Length: 86
Image (cartoon, rainbow, N blue to C red):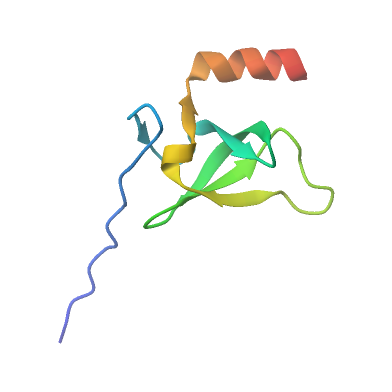
């Protein structure tokens, strides 16, 4: 019998060459604007980003983006953003 192996987690890097991991916050382009989102899934080629700047009325907006189109945001940046916009 063949044994099942665990799926390998893909390695993605942002525009600046930093590693993108699950639950990281990133800035990404969407409809000629810059949005802030959270990485919810790592696909083979793309990453799934949950938009936190404009929550959807009925369901959250999620987009598949190429990792090289995103820039990883540091925790200090997100703290400042949350304090400013809440």
